[in-house]
Figure 1 (cartoon, helix red, strand yellow):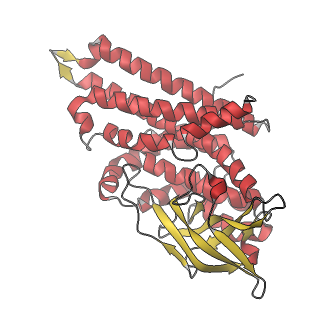
Figure 2: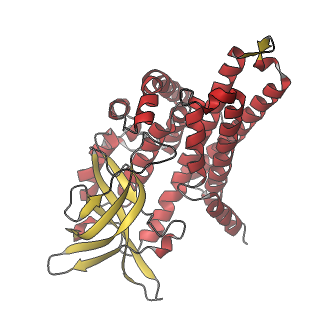
Figure 3: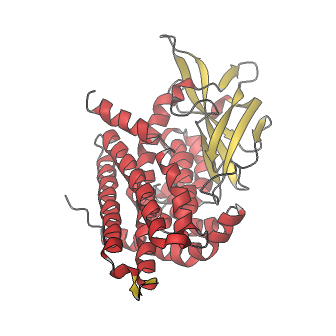
Amino acid sequence: MDFRLTDEQEALRESVRDFAREAVAPVIAEHYEKHTFPYEVIRQMGKMGLFGLPFPEEHGGMGGDYFALCLALEELARVDSSVAITLEAAVSLGAMPIFRFGTAEQQERWLPKLVSGEALAGFGLTEPGTGSDAGGTQTRAVLDESTDEWVINGSKAFITNSGTDITALVTVTAVTGTRPDGAKELSTIIVPSGTPGFTVAPGYSKVGWNASDTHELTFDDCRVPAANLLGERGRGFAQFLSILDEGRIAIAALAVGLAQGCVDESLKYAKERQAFGQPIGNYQAIQFKIADMELKAHTARLAYYDAAARMLAGEPFKRQAAIAKLHASTIAVDNAREATQIHGGYGFMNEYPVARFWRDSKILEIGEGTSEVQRMIIARDLGL
């Protein structure tokens, strides 16, 4: 097993790394402080083809694979997680469901805009009263046969990329009936932005990811054509589980990027900061902290590389994706804490990137499946 990157993969990594340092780093602190969405950065990412990395050229994509997306996410997150999560959600949660399950007509209508970065899409799964228990979905969609339309009522919470000026649609999970065994029938439905009855609430006041877009959504007799059903009716639960399995690899890559960014900033600071007549990097206490941080980032990277390799080979990867997401999110929080400690008082100042990393790290243990859910998945896959 060889985890060394090919020349093409290394070129992609270097290209995104340069972009993050030259285009993202100079502007992101202001966006973060003002809670504004970095449209100019997103446009540049679109021109680079980042939103189309894992999609075939026939849909306007770059003809790459999911691992290429992960490499890009890691490099972006080394500088900023708001930009990285915008890309992750746009691809794995926004465009990917349409690519995986959409009809030819749906793909022709939506994918060119999504894979070019011209438009964004959200994935409406979580609800105000339903998080990890996605089977408890309360949003309902009733098929009005007289008009051949779905009538949707309910609400969704914490939905990324759902309220920007370039958001084109949100894919919504909803109860569409009852299964023979008495369980809820869940389906997914495409709701275009601007549809009457579809309301996007003001953005949340968040602890982190302050330059990303997150909203609560409400649906009040929201009507969309029956043809907006995404995939098979009643297969919504299975569809979003498969999307989340893939997405956990992407989140792991993002978490590794944040963890590595903490190493980058700590190394820089340790060489510059003087204490007792010499750089603090000369002291073993600091050296050991940074060595441990590098150890954690390295092992977490290997975990997501392994999960991605299994996915691309068509092998089972659910357990490996859960392991990668659990481990990477845990060490991201660890590294952010240690980087802040190394920076001392300056680590508590927002002018330093590590303060942003600290605020951004915690959500990685929650979003796209909490750490507790990952442990459940791993245990069940082991036969427990």
